[in-house]
Image (cartoon, rainbow, N blue to C red; front, side, top):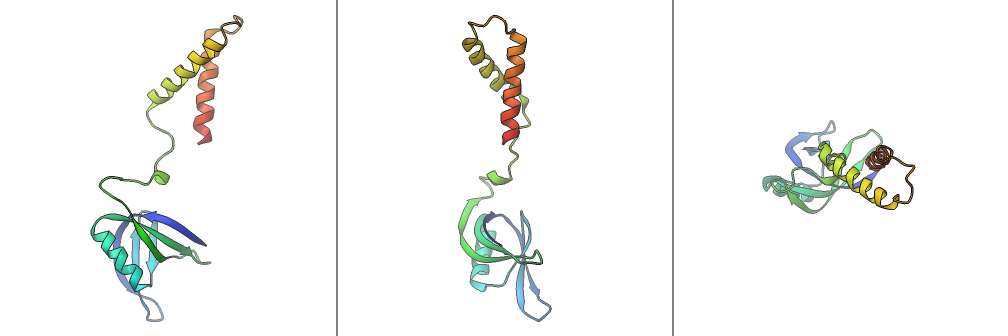
Length: 139
């Protein structure tokens, strides 16, 4: 299976396969990978030395080994972007965001429901909170 990935390289180590072929073990933020292509390795080493992320083509074989086969450029530096957006938690640990969202929804629902006095403020707020939870779980 082939996948384009943006990776952070943690280390590069020279190794030898069982049949005597020289390759390099690349430790990344997504686990251990290997690289057999010298031209690709040259670019990976440059990016590693500059603490830059790399955009690469990763091929996973039937045994689950991941090989970096193609170098497609440099991503952003580690200093400015500590994690990829795809690796960042999708749910904020700060509940104040959700309180704010629920309040905004509550205000909109209150404005729309002025004509229906049968619904209490407590029920309206509970529904607003449920909507925020539903949106949160969808992502």
